[in-house]
Amino acid sequence: MKLNDLKKAVAKAQQDLQTAEGKAADLRRKAKAAKAKTEQTRMEYKRARKAAKQAKKLASAAEDQSREQCQVLEKAQKRLAKALKKLGQGKAKQKAKPVRRPAGVHPPAPPKQPPTKQPAVAPKPRRPAGGSQPPPAVTGSATSSPVIPTI
Image (cartoon, rainbow, N blue to C red; front, side, top):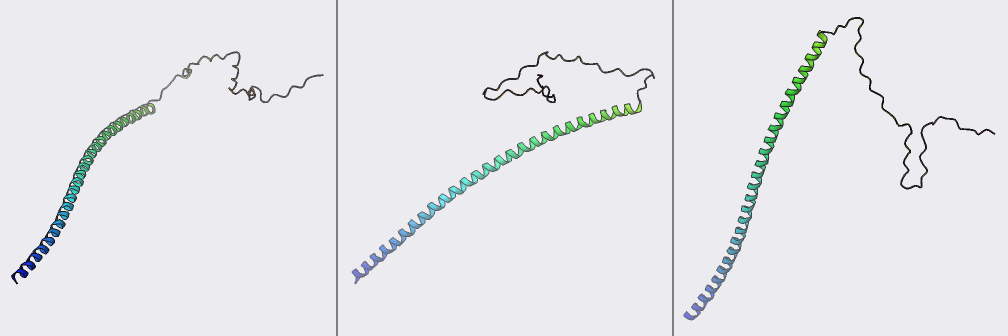
């Protein structure tokens, strides 16, 4: 009987060993999956940090640019206000002190520009490159009556 008990014990031990090996393999798979998930999470975290850093840098640059634009706008508004103020002062002077002229004197006439010289002969119209079209009509006398030959 001792031999049968020993055989049963060996069979039971082998069965326990197989279940333990199965559980160990299962645990190794789970550990490997957990390690891969951890690595993926770590990479996502690094990407998120990098994106946040870039977003912060872009936001800072946008704020700087906005600040500069505000300064330029303020300067332009000051210049505009100054110009409008000057213009208002000029108008006030004109209204306050109208220019009085003696009765017989008229304001000087603006200088006349000399007439531009025109060529005596009108330039000939250019012919198109194709040459198959008729020459364009001369637009000098559109309302002239047709000439009737005398017999």
